[in-house]
Length: 144
Image (cartoon, rainbow, N blue to C red; front, side, top):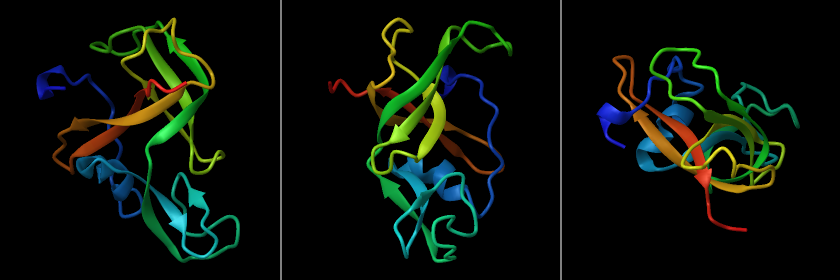
């Protein structure tokens, strides 16, 4: 996707807890905070693991593969310059089913989206004076 064809998006504010997530796409990696004691992934990031209360947390890359858990198709143009319709989905990351991410499904006709569809991460780069952002979006993986 060329910079001129990147759609308008409201970008996140980067901080020390989330920068790995928003900039991991620069290296093609989808990263989440993971407890180094029990192995539980956290999203959004928190300073303490909710499973074992450990503070021993670090960002780790996942495969980028997920399954569509829920979705909706938006037909309303809420902001100028946002092409409709588009798919908003909650995907479950395969490494941990309760690790869910709200995202957009791209390169998929709205009539083809389905719960249970296998999808893979793709990154959409946005330049920002406060730090570039790579938004994790998902597209059908082609796997059944």
